[in-house]
Amino acid sequence: MPYLKTFLILAKFCIFKWFGYKELINALYCKLFKFGENMSYEILVGLNVLDKSKYEEYRVAMRPILSQYEGRFGYDFHVSEVLITEKNNDINRVFTINFSSKNNMENFFSDQNYLEVREKYFNASVGGAIRIASYEKVD
Image (cartoon, rainbow, N blue to C red):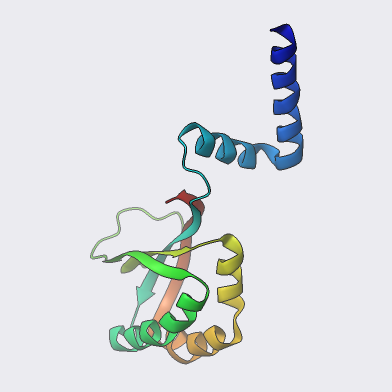
């Protein structure tokens, strides 16, 4: 039994050394609660939409590109009142956008077709945008 305890301590140290603290916590959390590999990457975004119809055109135009990168919208809210912000941002729209991986998210936002759609519709319809949070999510 003492050998098992020593082995476990060494194994924890090696896992921590190889993966780092955040990855260790995520791995342990998934193993403890048996979530397996069903993790995704999600962003919580706040916008100040100035032109609703132009913004909806943006959403329609970008959705096929989003799908190519295994992305989707989760929640989407029109916000009438913001009580507190960390920065001085006007926000009237809040949503989550979810990807199967962080890599897919990064590739989506750097995709040339997406950047063209963003330039044509998003920049003309949105006065400000803030990424409130981004995180790994257990699905």
